[in-house]
Amino acid sequence: MTVMHIAIPDDLKDAFEKAYPGETIEQAVERLLRAEVEKHQSTPPSNRASLVEMARRIREGTQPTSDDEIRAQDPAEVMESFRRLRENSPPTSDEEIRRLRHEGRP
Picture 1: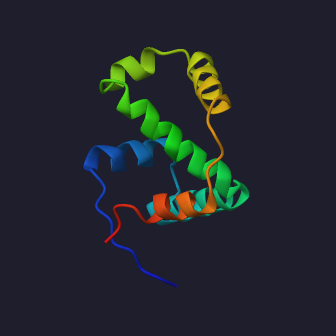
Picture 2 (picture 1 turned 90 degrees about the horizontal axis):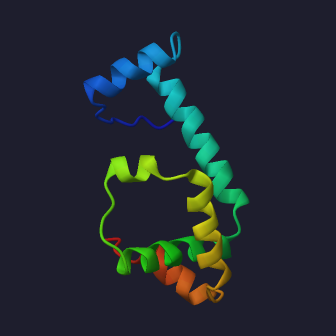
């Protein structure tokens, strides 16, 4: 088993302890990591790369959005806008997926 050391802000730790009494942070991290790995493995690579590319295109043409502005948006409208954007996106090649995965890594 691997041991990881992470810093968690006190306010997040307190909120976690109130929301999940009796569960340790280690248990929660393990549960979240397992769920994320499963989700990642069940998502076809083309979808992952398309989402990365879609996010890049969105960032290029917009100003940063504040947390309050994001929370004020209707989730259904946000998902619909993503769907429309993705509908018009060309497929991503395997080569492009590899490049996107490694871009910015040391």
